[in-house]
Length: 486
Image (cartoon, rainbow, N blue to C red; front, side, top):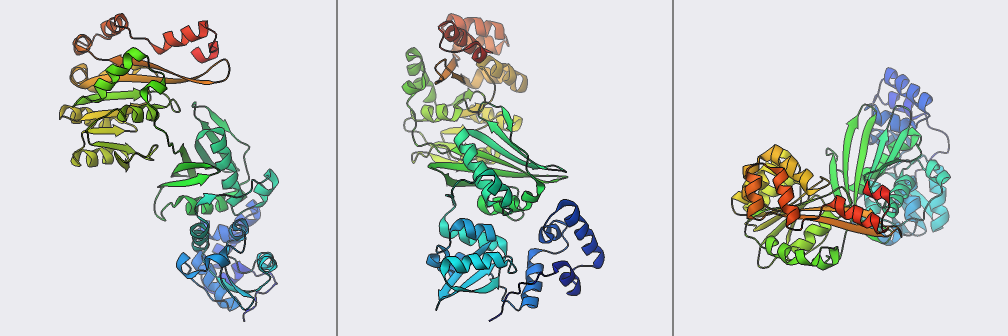
């Protein structure tokens, strides 16, 4: 049986000897290794001098070890689970079979004697080594254990010590979910790795920067976990973090310092609230129910991130009767078997929904100018559009819509605007405030004339309550602070 040497292998020299790279390339790679204290394998791959397959081919030949491609179908799940997932991912190795006290171990780095000893110690078997691709190994581990983050939290010093990226990714995703983060950013600079959290109220919080030596492992781990295609830049997966099911929408932006990762975190909701439970004034609920069942027109729910726009939209849709409903979201927030739910970008999803014969189309984001215009054109053609935007109030939204679409188109199609705001009460409880602007014939006449002042005055006479007035009212009652008002 081939034996892995305990002597240190000069991988760079070996690759030159096998004519897979030049002496000049080796010198350049060694310079980067010395300057940044990086592993030569990572440097060679980043410089595109030699890929992992080339490195494995050389090691397979030099060490007389088999070079194998693995998949979940050729491994024994019980054998894989005989070694803790954390250890398998840390060393990028996976056992595939165990016979007569000998375990066959596929490793990305067959020279890692420490990993071999750990596997033998845990299983009480001698190890027979083969070489495999790291991505394939991690994918098998994910398939066998399931794409869940179920490790024990790590102290900071262990996160820094683990160059595989597993501990780092686990730590920050679990922390982000716990803290209610909407987006996680991982960005390499020329000197360090930046980690930023986008909180649900829009604040950007920067965490302690980390050394660049962690970056290659983090990228490799994220590519496996998020199912980013080899040639792609976006993915969307449903996974479990702790006791919560979450969608991770991942996108990659290439910069001069490397790939910048954006991970949007959306907790999957199970309960769709009734309108009465969302805080709407009782006198408005029947009007809202009538409007959501109109045959055509546009309804917009607006507000900042984390204000609950999607929750409001699903509550509105729960009032729909005998209609074909299609929802368009990058990640589905609420599962409802009565709707056709598309996970898609707004523009392509809207085209599909229109051709499917939908009566009502809900869009997670209709802010793009092209999508916005198409939504209103679709409403004119006889569909009901329920869309979301990000403006802070109804009249801010209306002002922007007039600029982009003109007042005549709005007057002919716009049925209702709902603006939503999340506030923290004096007792630290969360409250949600709404303003609802319903376009009756008088308001449509003023809107057609482009007279926003008259629209506002007439709406207030009919009982419209602005968010600013509701905030001041709650401040006077002592239920929220002055900070929340501004």
